[in-house]
Structures are given as structure tokens and as C-alpha cells.
Image (cartoon, rainbow, N blue to C red; front, top):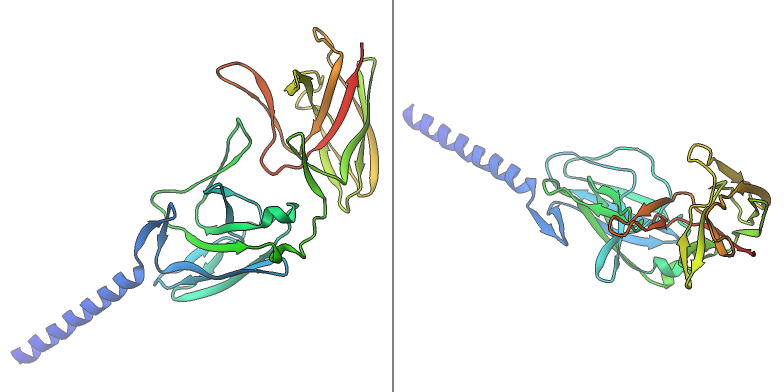
Length: 303
């Protein structure tokens, strides 16, 4: 009887060791890779781009369920550093579960207005609690990662051949350092009696929404400098919609008090913008968030 008891205890001990080893092994090994904490048993595979669609598989080889969002965050390697980059416009607040010892195939369409050549390069897709911030001095997006959380990472290289069929619907270009569309712009900007009149032209196949009053900059010694000339409060600076293939003419008042009015100006209409004050010099400047497409008009005011 005593012998059977000892054998039984040995069997139980072996089973406990096996179960413990199983949970320990399938928990996965956590380490920092490419600057981000990752679990060796949680990863992406089969990441690829075909016909304008990014597809991949999230693999979960742990014994617990894992939650992911509808789409991953995306970064592009620029000058050796991972920088936030948009491969899609919108995202739904949808939670998706990847079961233990399971996997799930996911995909999304590339539907941003980037020029095809800007889509060429190395990218990484990220699932996990990525912290989103923005540099108020530059408008640049910033991603950061929690030291006590793990992330699911996948890598994608996009070549020129892959983006051949992706259309450049808005014909994006960078002029005077501002991201613009050749299909949406400002024309006939004129000044008279303290008011500026302008016409918004939208040749795109989608409607546009902009603030009805722009931020004004004046060319000073060859550089565009912010000038606080628009007599519009934040509460009154409403947005206007310009339907596809249409034009709209608007006007706004300017403050000419104490200003040397004559000169070259540009009117910058952006979906988001703010005025940043340098804490050291007190100089103010217009800041446009990274990736924002602006409408720009030019105006010359004479004596």
C-alpha cells in the first residue's frame, strides 16, 4: 500500500512538472527586439502587399487569448529610424480576439493620398498599446511604447513594382514646403477695403472641408513668416464644405492696424493647424500636422 502511494505521488509530481513546464514554455519568452518588447510566441507572418491590399496573419502560440484592434499601427523606416506613417485613412474601434494556440488572417486596403513613390520602403505593423502623441513645435507624429507591455510586430517591404497600380487620386505635391493637391487650390485671392476675397477650386472626386479663414503668412527676407492678420476668433472660424467638381467664393476681414501691409502673402487652409510660440524667442509660427493636405493661395497687397 505504501509503495502504491509513493508511486502515485511520483506520478502526480511528474504531471505537475509537465503541466508547469507546458504553461511556462507556452507563455513565451519576452525580450526587446528592434526597440520594442515582444513575445516569441506572438507574431505576424505572411505580411505582403498585393493589388493595393496589405494582408498578414497574426499567430498566437500562447495558452491565453490575445486582443488586437481592427488595423495595426504603421511605421516606415526613414533615415534609419521608425517613423509613424499612414497606409489607411480611417479605423473603426473594433476589438478582435486571437484564440490561444490560434491564428487569424487580417488585411486592409491602402487608401491614403500619398504619392506612390512615398509608399516604397520598409514598414512595420504593430498591434498593442501604442501611445500616440504629436510634437507641437513641428507637427510630427510620435509613437511610444510601454515598458511593461508586449507588442505584436510584422515587417513589410514595398517595392516600386508593388505600387505601380496604386492611383495618385489627388495628385499630391509639395510646394513651398507644404503638402498640397493639384486638384484642390485657391485662386483669385484679392484684397480690398480690409477684406480678402478668395475662391476655392475643388476638381477632386470627393468633397473637401476647410476652415473658412486661413492662416496668413508674409514673405520677409525670402521666408514665409506668420502674421496675425485674420480677424476671426476660434469660435467663429467655422469649416466650409466644397463639393466635388465645384467652386466656392468666400471672404474674411483682416486687421491692418500697426502692420506694414504692402507685400507678398500666402493663405494656408489646413484641416488642422495651430500657432506655436517658441518659448525662447517668443516668435510665432504656423504648424501643420504631419500628413495634412493644405489648400494654398497667394496674394500681393500694394501700397
